Every structure is written in C-alpha cells, then in structure tokens.
Amino acid sequence: MNYATIKKHDIANGPGVRVSLFVSGCRHHCKGCFNPETWSFEYGEEFTPERADELIEAIKPEHITGFSLLGGEPFEPENQPVLANLLERIRKVYPEKTIWCYSGYLLDEELMAHRIGDPETTDRMLRCIDVMVDGEFVQEKKVLDLRFRGSTNQRLIDVKKTLAEGSVVPWQDDFKVYEAGAAAKLEVPGVTYEG
Image (cartoon, rainbow, N blue to C red; front, side, top):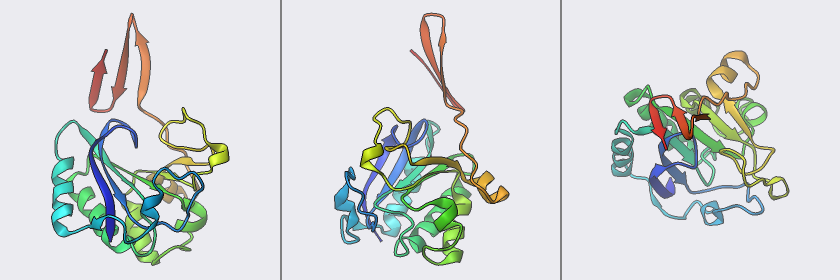
C-alpha cells in the first residue's frame, strides 16, 4: 500500500489535534476532489513498517486526541489488509484515543453489507473505528462551513453504535463552543482551550 502524506498536527479532520494518514488509491474519482493525485494506487511512497512505527509514535503525546484515516480511499480492497493491521495496533496501544475514517463508500449499504473487499478484513477495520464520514464528495452539494465534511450528503456516523444497533446512528458532537463571559471557551474531552 502507498500513502500520500502523514500529518502529525491535523485540526481539520476530526475534533482536537490529530495525526492523519492519507492513503493512495481511489476509484470514486469525485468531481472537485481536493487531492485527485491520490486516485492512483502508485502515488506517494510505500507504507512500510517503519512508517507505521513513526505514526504510532506521533499519536503518543497527550495533546493528540486521536487518529484520522483518509485518502484516496481507505476501504479499497488493495488498502484494507495493511490498514486493518494498523487500526488494530492503534486501538490496542491507544484505547482511549479516537479513530476517525473518511470513506466514499456508504457504511450501511456497502461496507456493512460486505460489498467492498474481503468481509472479514472490512469488519476488522470497522470494529476499530469510532466515527466515519461516509459518502462520496458531491461538488454540487459542497458547503464551505460544514463541520468535518465537504458536502451535505456526507454523514458523520457513530460506528460503534451503528454496528451494535444494525442501523446508522449519527455521531453526537461533544466538541462544544460556547460563550463564557467575554471570552469564548472551547471544550474537547481531555483538552481545554481558552481564548
């Protein structure tokens, strides 16, 4: 599996400060994609065991809220075996940190229905993920101020609850901004910022 980049201080792809991995390879080819170079499975560099170790170490600091997996497309069958192992390792080493995944595939209709990739490998990945942003990016439904997603068709899903209940459960945002006197206060579980 190849990857495009690793971001060690990402604040755009999930709550808090996160480490993000952008994998290569995507068959969706969404019009208006923000990184079409990642459509090619050959783009970028090979994701080696050394890169996996580097990523695991980058997640370690207390200020890192969790890990986000993007692409490209993480659930392409070619990417799943490496990513299933990586996600299980992250979950074991950092059980308290959240794992987010962005996929153009629909969680309920395609991934849980085992229409993409090896069913066992797909399930291994899903069991590790806390929140999924699913659905292809649709340029005609793009809204600039959407939180953690690019177009209104994309869903923020609580994967653990969805797997338990068998139907899609929306993610409840516990990342709150409110006014406290004259200063705005931002609250994230385990992280507080005042400014």
